[in-house]
Amino acid sequence: MAREVTQSMSTGLKHFGLAPLFDPTEGDTVCEPLKGEPGYWAGACSVLYEDDPGRFLLYYRLRQPRPIRGGECRIAVSEHGISFTDIWSATQHDLGTGSMEKACLLRGLDGVYRLYLSLVDPETNRWRTDVLEAARPDEFSPRDRRAVFTPDEVGVEGVKDPVVCVVGGEYHMLLSYAPKPRAVTLREAEAMHATGDVYNTGLTKSATALAVSTDGVRFEWVGDVFSPPDEGWDSYCRRISSVLWTPPVFSCFYDGSASVEENYEERAGLAYSLDLRSFTSVTPHGPIITSPYGRGSVRYIDGVRVEDDFHLYYEFSRPDGSHELRHSRVAV
Image (tube, rainbow, N blue to C red; front, side, top):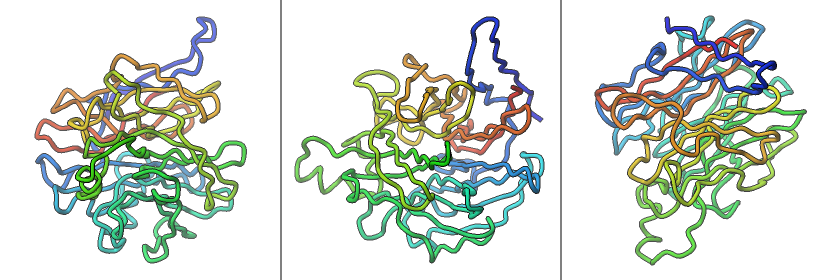
């Protein structure tokens, strides 16, 4: 097992709301990629813990190099949070898409399980976000997915990678969105969605927006809450991947990159928020968690607190260029 890290809060020293930091090299491997080669990834995860019946639920995605890309997504269950058993899966063919990426698994206030899933719309070749509902986490039907947001609906070029939590009875959804460029040539406009991934063109950036809902199904678009700065290590991408309650603030890991050349190999930054509508980066000069291998990618961190421990799951770059899904535990 990975070494247990302690990240304590000291009120005597006036240290409040500290995020659960960890050494990713000491994490446990939860899922390996299909092959140990560049372009093969296991990750883009989302995790829940249910006190009753006492289990971890984990969404993750398996990717292969083009032309397959995000070919399969799965939900798995575990008693202790490290060794998981798959209980549900869907392929890109089941979902009618060229690729799927991060999703967010949530059990709503009404007891319904919802999977908020990002996938490429086959008609427009743009990233969109849909929702699937089920009474059990192994009963999601890809045929019954419904749109939450399409890019045209909210005036952007792509919307994906949802992170959803409930605060005070209101559902908050944070999404990666691609703003419309101010000016593009005709050739650039044609190229923007030709590959089915506007984020990999360099013609726009990856920022984070907020949407809210009272029922977990119908969301109202609020707009931008965390954009890349003009310069710096995260000036191309600021994509929030997790929301952790560390009183008196929310601690949020985010994926950052400086340019399109680092797309798919983002590294982890850290921000905090008082209300999930305004975020402050505490890593403006460089990432806070990286891998020693490849381009240093540690991305899509998500986590839950269970009793006195945070369980963190993340996509980790390996020496062979692939990404695996790992777990670290941090004592509060």
